[in-house]
Image 1: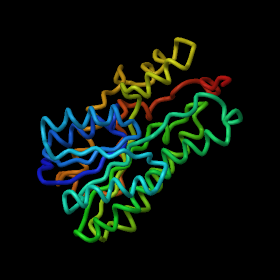
Image 2: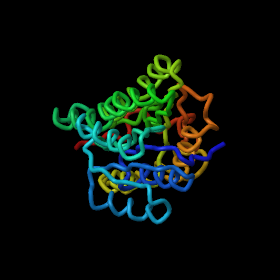
Image 3: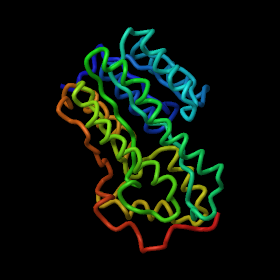
Image 4: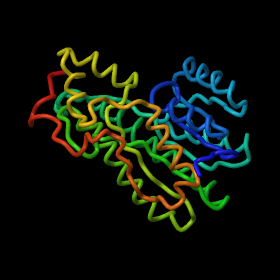
Length: 266
């Protein structure tokens, strides 16, 4: 039921972290995948590694905050494989860790563009293909941040909350076309992005705090998000529509920290 053989998928933000893990999980499950990322060097290396498993893997450079570049990735997939069955809108930027009152207009628009507008572009240009072929699966990567506050991350949380709301709207609107739209809300995952946030914190305590937020006693691995994405892309998830999967080790069911903590001067 979780076999992706002969399915064609687009995954954004595949140069590292969760996107790389999802793409790898898809390829290992038999899918033909078009990868995209703004980082060409790392993106092409991931592509070369995955081509050793399945030669039908392609990399296309894309800045997901730009509509034409997202559209190009999707069109490349359709032209190369004559179809498209799955899109994973994963690419995002972690901009925050300081009060929203210190955030520049430039940073605000950067996080909105990369994290939220990118999902709009991916859905906008994949849905017509899905309608044409009789169905498809949209998987949007949200965040535990959309469910539980962490001071200093208001803009990031706004984008992830918007993703969940958009997911539900699309699930209702396009469900009758057999287009399933779901989201995944990861907890703290062992990725380069998280390591960057920890290194920029400066207190030396953030990672310890992150561990303490997860009742399961550890942070997650990217492959655990990949496994959930495979389910949602496969026939095993055929009756799943409009859901948000909290793959977070219990993070969102417990208090994160005392009110006001975590937001420090930029």
